[in-house]
Length: 321
Image (cartoon, rainbow, N blue to C red; front, side, top):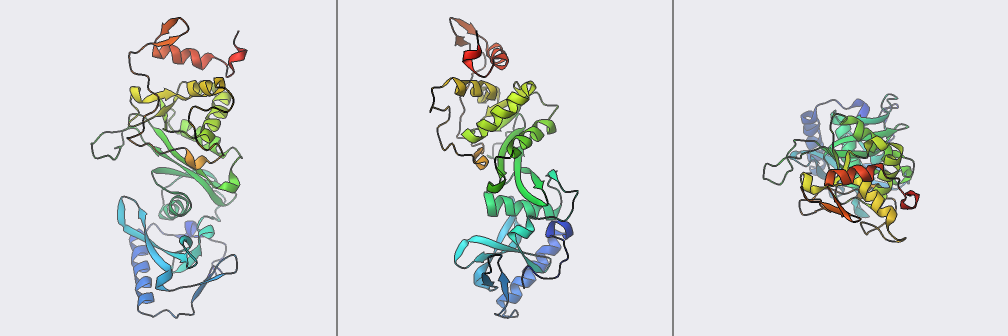
């Protein structure tokens, strides 16, 4: 059993029915047959490198497809030489390499697509759990027939998940991930643009705190190109209340005024958009308390006026006369 089984030019996302229960039953039956020895020990899966992995119970395991629904599981094959590396996923009575799971033969599946079908959730699982990390409401970025990234959002009014019943007060751009070989191609900026367009009716949009230096670079380029968005984007902590926000354009201005080599948020400066950050209730951004004045020169400005002035200022302070 390997990736060369006659499948035409189709991939799992193109052919999987929206029947997770049926998939679960078929997967459990296959796993049971392996345990009973019904499958011969000579059965193998061939990797793209030419290496062959024997299909046996010691090399396969179940993984939860959804964090909040642990009973929905999929079967994965790991490399016996590196048990932390998943090399294939069992779908449609066959093993598919992780790279094939991330591919599509549908030419209309291009750009950012909302995750809806069971097949798309499998793609998200591979990107999110096997290649990256966590899960929220998500859009997958497709490019030239392959899934190359995704971003997650916390929707305004959704529960924050800490057991208190509190809800997010604005839409939040929570996590963004672009596969390494597709970085530095403007895809992070494209996803930020899509986020802003998706929530066009909202006056304020959040990005989870802390924001990585690489993501600040994305924000800077985006806000230079779209000055109309400077008053909408905020770095937020916790629920995104007024006392838990700071204007991102203001932070970009602050970074531009710092001496060379300093940064508002210390940390790794290499371009890795997977480090945008996930909101943690223990994290707190720089806060502007409601009603507090902020000293600017010799006068005191209100919070709203300060932000308005900063949005109108050019990026580099030496350009101000």
